[in-house]
Image (cartoon, rainbow, N blue to C red; front, side, top):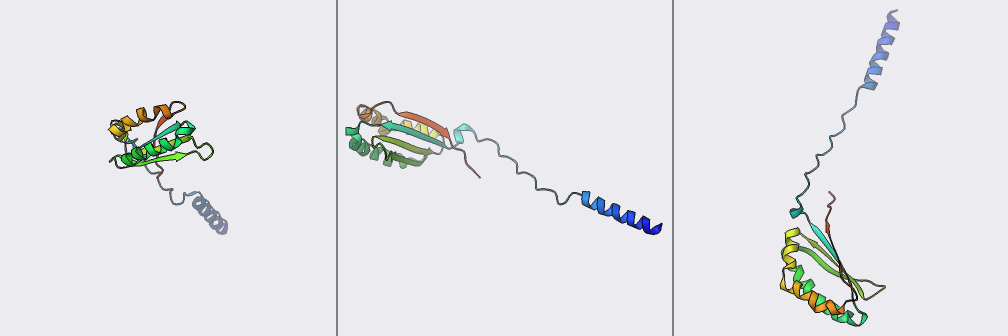
Length: 137
């Protein structure tokens, strides 16, 4: 009887040990509060469709706005890419510190002058989009 009791007790201890949770899983990190829109990084894309005979003029004019924009305090990147399959299509890709930096950029004299200078060189209106940048940890 005693042997049966010991066997039963040992079995219950093993069963209890198997059901006992192991080291608890680490807690999920708390999610940061969303950043206010005025503080979030922004990306701008501007697709430009240039008349084929004006591509060289457009690239030359774009050099000044690119260099000037990249020197602005809130500019993190300002690049122009040319479509390799259609040399008359371009896209500006810009990354800005925040919306205030974009607002300042739009107020710059060289930015304001670029549109009127190049508007007759375009096949159609520029497609401008502004995005919030989502950062991965």
